[in-house]
Each structure stands twice: as structure tokens, then as C-alpha cells.
Amino acid sequence: MSRHPKTWAQPDPACRLPDQAPGARAAVWTGGGRARRGWGGGGGVAAVVLIGLLLSGCTARHYRRSADKESYAIIQQMERRVFGHTNEFSIQTRYSDRDPKTISPAEVLDDRAVSNRFFVNLDQALQLAVENSREYQTQKEQLYLAALALTGARYEFSPQFFAQATPQIAGSPDGADVGSVASKVGVNQLLKTGGSLTMALANDLVRYFGGQPAATARQSVINVLSVNLTQPLLRGFGINSPAVEALTQAERDVVYAVRTYSLYQQEFAVGTVSAYFGLLTQKDIVRNNYRNYTNRVETTRYLQARAVDRERLSNADDARTAELKARTDYIDSLASYLSALDAFKLRLGIPLAAQLFLDDRDLEELIGAGLIPVDLDRRAAFAICVQSQMEVLNAIDRFEDSKRKVRVAADQLRADVNLIGSASLASEPPDDYTNFDPGKVQYSAGVRLNLPLDRLRERNQYRRSLVAFEAQLRALSLTLDNFRDRLDRGLRTLEQARLNHVSAAESLKVAQRRVENNLMLMEAGRATIRDVREAQDGLIQAQNSLATIYAQYLTARLTLLLNVGLIDTRPERFWLQDPLRERLTPEQRGPSPLRMPDDQVLPPENFLEPTS
Image 1 (tube, rainbow, N blue to C red):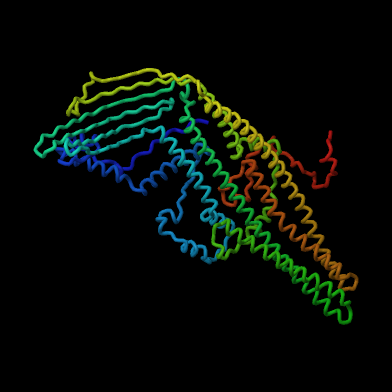
Image 2 (tube, rainbow, N blue to C red):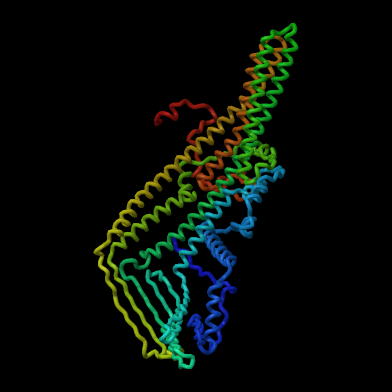
């Protein structure tokens, strides 16, 4: 995987120091100080001002904006790199701009007690979920934190400026007082070659005060400009540097986080759609059970009226028993639906105190669209999965990471051979601190050798990296096997739901005819109440079975597309779209592992025994 181009964070104008006048330059380098009897000139005042600026720094709000700007830019860059496009991203919530001290538990309690009324279709439910889901927000924050970690890794390879000053005064009752300011400004830079470079300007200001006020003061001011370079030539050179490796891993971690977040968005959308249609199915079952109950009530009343002279009382009691069971089934299904509705509110992130009602037209539209076929060959499905599925791609790349870690750990077993160099130039003593004579520069260069006589820690780390590599190898093979299993099971489950739909549709027709016939026969005295009750039981079972199959088939199809890596949850009503129609070639199409030609049942030998 290629390295991500480096971006430098730009300083905020609010944090820049004011321009310094030439005459105040010495005070800037000294960094500040104070004396019991004055330093002379304006340098001391400017130094104090500079110290105040440095101590005050920037506001916390500025640092937050700076972190957001850099992290959001990284996320957009990585999304464009991984997917070829980018989406708007923010972890901002309605609490983000408020001081945490102003948010009380009472406010959270009041917020969760709000009893709004929602009547939503599936599109609106998805929008509510994205805006309010706590889990969705957590996933966004995980991606943000990965990008934030990368800003820290990149910072290590950016110029790091420093400025420090130590003013102090010392003396004794009998001797002269000595005031001094030791200051240093400069910049450190880690190099992608594994080395480091430091440039610094040090300033030492010393003033001696006499024991009596009339005594003559003496002072000394010296500036030293220095440059230091350390560059590994063997161990830790270039991409084998642990610091460079840490940056590489941080960049790859953001890629993984971008993929993981994108996969979560798809899983969240599919899960919300499945839960929504599951609720609509439960609503349908509640209505079916209520109709069954009212039918049983009518049957009981009819038999009780006839039990006076034309029907046995036992038949009326039998009908009453069936009526009570239907009543229990209705109450149980209603309670189950309301519990599932509360769970759906949790998914959406809306208060449980709110009233939520779902639009039935989405289920009507789903039934009207029918069972969208998936003619995907199992081998082609796995080949597409390896190229497109985010979790599989992350597993493959983490395997590559483990190989790279072995290489870096092995490099740490080698000898240290470092090129070191330094140069320094001091101003003219004792107080001419503005002039530097290049002819008086002092420099040194050499090579430092550290033989690998003690590498126990490095040996252990290298061995751990080999163990981690084999663990990652097993994890990759398990991931591939798991997804092959998911795809095969998904194809079987999809065909199973389709075949069951064929049976359920025919069962419903038979059950309806059976109820009608038995009611007419019972009125004619040619059928018993038990016959009617069994027919009604078969009808309600057929109705509820058919009601569940559409949602089951949809969930199986969307899950299969998710595991293959071909689902796109961005279009409206994506659950009714067929992304395979334009994507698959004729060679990639094929029958399901459970396919039965013309929907005719095949003998078990076709699946359980080897065939020629």
C-alpha cells in the first residue's frame, strides 16, 4: 500500500507572535527575564511580554478546531483514495459546542422522557437512525480517533519548534548578586531516512550586580548557533526505522478504519431495513391473529346457539377452548410486537417514551416487487468477495502488516552504525551577541558503532513478531473460510426461502379452501367443530408463514450482497435494487447449491451422495 502524502498543519493566525522590531531581537532570543536593579534598554520588557505570550498559548477551542480540520481532511483523503469519492463527515452533535459543565444529568433525564409522536416510513426511519443512533455515533468517533492518531504520527516527522527560557537570580549577603537568563529556541526534525536533525540558537545572559547600589554592574551576553545530525547507516535505516514504521502503520490504520466505518454503514442500513420489515411482518401476524380470534368468537357463538337443541355442548366447549387459545396467541403476538418496537426505538436512538408508528406501505411495495432473484455462482461470489469485501481486504492488509513487522524486528538485531555530525558558532564575547564570525565555526563528524553484543530484548521482539505473523496468517485463512461459508450458506438460505415461498403460497390457497368447505359442511351437519378448528389452525399458520417469508428473503438477499461486497446502501429504496443485474457477467451467474429445477423436489441422493 502506498504511503499517504504528508500534510502539514498550518498555524492559526490567532497564535502567531507579534512581529518583533530589530532592536528587540535580543530580547526575543533571551526569552525573558527580570533583575533586581534593571537590565538596561527595552530587552527586559520585551522578554517579559514574550513569556506572557508563550504562557498564555492558544485557546482550547482553537486546538479543537485545529484537530477537527486536520482529522477531517485525513478522512476525506483516505475515503477518496479507497473509494474514489468522499462523503461529508462530522462527529458534531447537539452537545458538542457546549461546555460539559453545563450539561447536567437532569437534562439527559428530561431529554429521554420526551414523548414525541413519530409516524415513519422506512426512508424516514433510516434518516432518524443516522441522526440519533448512539452506536452509529460511536462508530464515527472511532474513525475520527484513528485519523487523530495519524496526525500525531505525522507530527513526529514535522518540524517541531521549541522555545524555552530560565530566568533566575542568585547571590549572598556578602557577595555580588548574579542575574541570568538561559534561553534556547530551535527546531527538531525526524527524517524519513531514520535520522534526526536539530537546529538551535542558545542565549546566555548574565549580569553581575555589586554589593552596594553605587557599585558598577558587569554583564555578559553570548549566543550560540548549533546544528546536530544523527543518521543510522545500518540498523534502523529508512523503512526499517521504528519511527517510520509507526507512521506507516498509523496511515494504514486509518485506511482500515475508513473501510470498517463504510462496512458498518452498510451493515447498519441492512440491519435497520431488516428490523423494519421484521416489525411490519409482526404487525401483519398480529392482525392475522386478531382476525383468527374474532373468527373463533363467531364460531363459538354459533355453536352455543345451536347447542340448545341441535349441537352437542361438548362441541361448543371445544370451540370455546380454541377461541381462548386464539385470544392468547393474539395477546402474545401483540406483546412481542411492542417489545420489538421498543428495541427498534433503541436502534433509532429515539426516546422509549416516544410513540412510534410504522407505515405498512413499504411491506406492500416489497411484496409487490416479489422475490428478486440472485443467480450468482458460488465460486464467482467468493472471487468477488476477495476483491470487494471490506473485512476481507482489511484481513489481507493486516497480514501484510505482520510481514512488515517481522522485517523491522529482524533489522533491530543488527549493529548500530550511525553517522553523527555537529557544528556550532558563538557570538563575539563578552556582549556582542549580534555578530557571528563564520571563520570561527566549530564542527565535528564521525561514525558511532555499537556492536550487537546485547540484543535480548530485540531477540524477544523478533520472536514475538514471528509468532504474531503466524497468528495473523491463521486469522486470514479463518476469515477467508468464514466468508466462503457465509456465501454458501447465504445462497442456500436464499433458495430455501424462495422454495418455501412457493410452498407457503400454495398452502395458503389450500387452507382458505379448507376453511370455507368445512364451514359449509358443518352448517350442513356433515363436519365436526374439530374439522373446522383444524382448518382454521392451518389457515392462520399459512398466513403467518407467508407473511414472514418476504422479510426473511429480503434479509437473506441483503446479507448475501453485504458479504459479497456488492451492496450499495446510498440510493433511495436500495433494498429493492438489484446491483447484480449490470455487474455480473454470464460466466459469474449460476444456480444455487440448493437449486431444484422447475421447483420440483429432488431426492436426497442428489445432495447427500457423490454424483457422476
